[in-house]
Length: 490
Image (cartoon, rainbow, N blue to C red; front, side, top):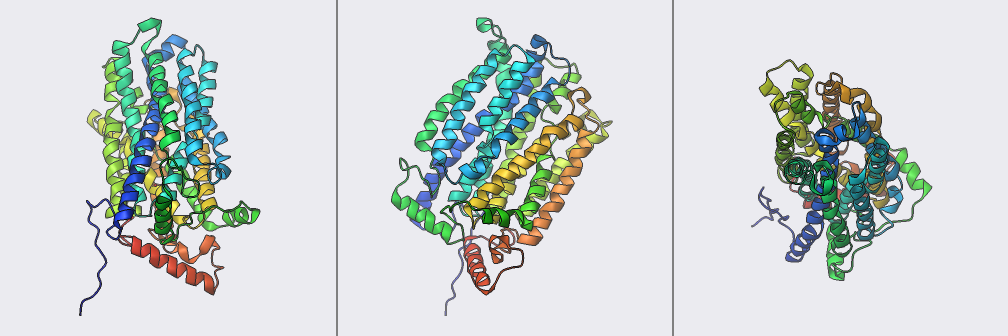
């Protein structure tokens, strides 16, 4: 007598083995609509964030007479704008169609990115950086909100990783573009090279914003009907409901807020994400070290600065693909954080061979490789409530970002560079805390949130008999859709 067997998913398989042909067609369609657009827009945003570092060290500081902590101030005001602007999106994500919201914010972001080219003073740059950050703030949690609205828990990692490559590629190409502008555009129409990069950035951004209105799919609850049929929506809704994901938003209530803010899960996630946000070295530290060697031209410094983000692409792809296919989320975070910790310890010691410093700076981007793993995990933990998922994604980003508004002023002041005697040890401690909290989350809720489904809406022990029934059936659905509850997994 034959026995039924569960299809086995290999590491090189893109789809789940139990997906129907229609589901595979839908997943491919979503991949083409979401991932390339999210990646390209994020890439352009991080060209801008890399630009401010490169521009400062490639002529801006000299042209505008900066000689102190202006660079860290520019980074800090950007962070402040992020925190201020994020909070309304807890309410807006479930209620405003994402295919309208995201392109509109991107359009405004592009306009103020362009205006940075004409800055003539410290105050003007501070104002532009603040406004750019206002319109950029919601993009990162917004993409993860959209990913969690369409994909199953064992599909999010690869898509989140592909999107997040935009960060490393943005910093990488910012260095290369800055090098090219210094060589070829410096002085054209009377503008120095660092000003041209802001112009190029905006030229790429503005058309992307327009395209977004036509191709970004929105969410199942508020879809972009230009690109999705009713059949697409029916298939998407069915495959997500099978694993316990809520697909329709409900009115906001104070009861929901009270339940969320009184839950242990919420506070653990906030602490966890705060450790992650503070576990990275200052992004300008490598450039400051290269400049301190007095060995390379500005163009060569920018080219060498691309080493770290180039390796970051590998780290992001490996870590995020692993979590979907063969590596537990907790161990993926541990692996990336261990590499980051090693580099931070080397930089903390400082008096080491120069080759060790090259290694330490080169692996800096291993720290950000865990981002989509962590945020994908949050999506899974809150898959049973759209409003809670939106609130947690936004608040976790806002509160974690808030710490980076003021902590770098003490840990990574520009005048302490490139050694940053307080910064590197602080980030190393945060990396250790990140790993510790990761295993607290894993132990409490399971590697795929399967333990948490027994506590609907995380009432922390107040479930009744009917809740147990719901939790058990949801868990079984999640297990069926997963490769493995234990050994697989922003």
